[in-house]
Image 1 (spheres, rainbow, N blue to C red):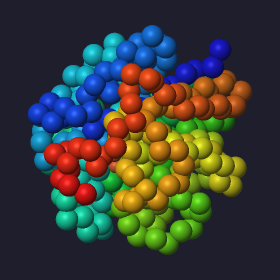
Image 2: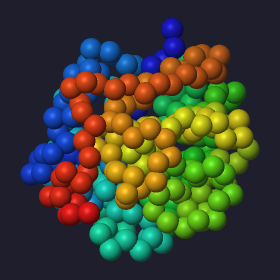
Image 3: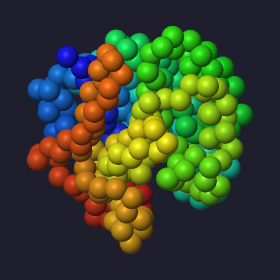
Length: 273
Ligand SMILES: [Fe+2]
Ligand SMILES: [Fe+2]
């Protein structure tokens, strides 16, 4: 039997702006029925936890309510974005915001060993700040001592679109500087799976022998007029099956009770588009 991971992402939860809570609850019910071995949320747990500490507490309460083993990593909406990105809507990550996230969800970098695999979670936004030293040391050790296990890396932002050598600087993918820090920390380790969220699209691509899996949002999609189409714009989650011999399968799971909402229909979430 493979180890099954339900990767949820971009849940964008808020107690005072609960636009996407019903979708989360519908997917939570499906997860409780499916009973994956582990649930991983790849970030943007909150609508705006970077500014509203209660949203982090609310998201933690809902995740604990799953009644399933879960781990999380932060997204830009949970503790601010990379310092290098000029984002007029979002404060950059800082130590205080990071500490608020950690107080609710535990360390923002971690590893979990399962048969045949080592799972490594990390904080994508920290790589673009002066806060990433401890996590780089942690990843270097975890990667170097995987001892023959296949590695699956979980990170909020995609490593790249098509090529890890891309030079684009922006908000959608890991930027060249942060990406270089991550790849340096990984050293000779080449993760078999790199799983992310952030783009609110499902995509599964082989890039140079590595499987890049983008989880969709459980909450909403961003329409083509505001965001290119890279993959599938649907709401749902990804089920990963990790086999002890290193094989990996993944599939998009859609839940009828969690409709594909469109962010333009929720101007009170992030303002009109
Ligand atoms: Fe998001
Ligand atoms: Fe994000």
